[in-house]
Length: 202
Image 1 (cartoon, rainbow, N blue to C red):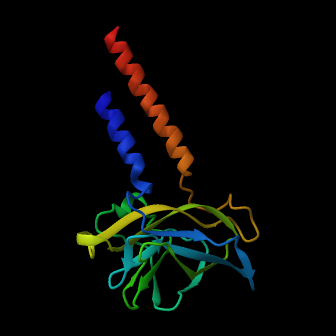
Image 2 (image 1 turned 90 degrees about the vertical axis):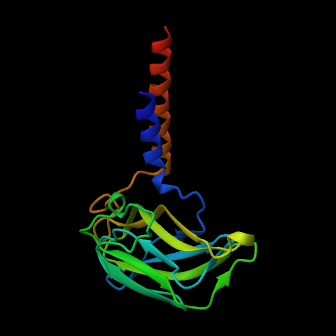
Image 3 (image 1 turned 120 degrees about the vertical axis):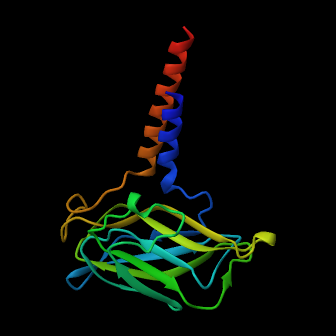
């Protein structure tokens, strides 16, 4: 029982990177853009990290995908599978039937120099107007002491398009549980583990 509980809790941690150095968030709410909807993202480059050759960030499973626009010094590609960092199980977070959007950095090396850097202008267009909790992955580099240049990879939750045009996000979205859901599930598994230990002692 103990081994099962530990394995289950470990499996739940996949959405929370140990060092999230690229953290995107939806800037406000989706806005209408002709017959489509604009999802405007800002990406925070966290302290002690840098971006350069090999840096990318992928937003998974964009329903109703129409197009995407990168900020300066970034390019954009789309694929049904990936792009995913090498140390992450893409099959666990990526529906191969729904398009992914990857922004790749192609500018000069940029370091935070100890304070966060906001990078705006990551735009995704969708026929869907609602949002659901999806997943993103990233790859960049460390920028601190002897760790400088060491690759950083991770995953996390992000708001992505969901729902029918003009809808509320409850339609076609491929929902991922909110972080609070993972916490509640983890707490429940911990309780099951403790009850099992108590019963063996009596």
